[in-house]
Picture 1 (cartoon, one colour):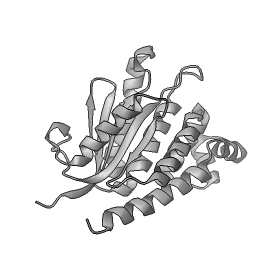
Picture 2 (cartoon, helix red, strand yellow):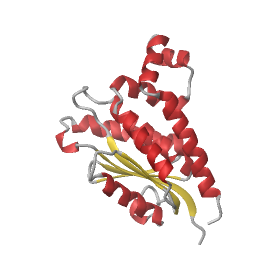
Picture 3 (spheres, one colour):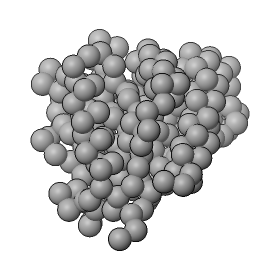
Picture 4 (cartoon, helix red, strand yellow):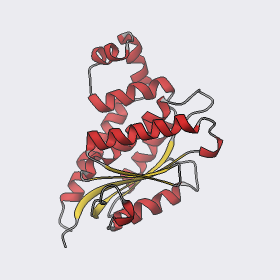
Amino acid sequence: MNENSLGVLTGDIVGSRRINDHMQLDQALESVLGLLESQYGACVDRYRGDGFQVALSSPAQTMTAAVLTRAALIRHSPSRRETWDARIAVAVGWGDLPEAGRFASANGEVYVRSGQTLDALSEGDTRFALSLPQPDDTLALLTRFADDVIQGWTHNAAEVMYWQLQHGETQQALAKRLGRAQSTIHQRLHAARWSLIDDYLTHLDRRITAIMEAPR
């Protein structure tokens, strides 16, 4: 049987037991998972309340989807003192998409690697990890840098990143969308390190595409 190339995200909410407004958090998570379904054709599922899993048929888009998910959660955070975020383990490899979002029916070692990688994340402060068919120390290091940047995002920085990741607009168009001055948008994109995150995602797109197209 020929397996498909896939990207899989397995994640959970950081410190979910300490979050007061679980209804609002649940709505924020449901909203971004619905966005991944509509924008990337992803299959999504929830488990254990604060856990989620996403499968995409385009592995190169998986990390962008993961960054978008974290941006969505951070932008909905109730305050600077209570920032919502998620640990997300991204794995690319081969397998089958689940039937109607039922991940219990999904086949492929990529699902196992994604789950195992999330388990490893739970033991430290890192919130992002990338698992490839063959380990790549350089991409792993770049992902740690990206995680460090994202953990420093404020609500405002996450908001502009959330829209920019979706639409790739000019600062003027983004300012109009959000009803802000262009100078404010510029400042927030700079604070979010948009140019670095954009370069990181573009580089990952090329590398993952090359990895998945190489002979197995």
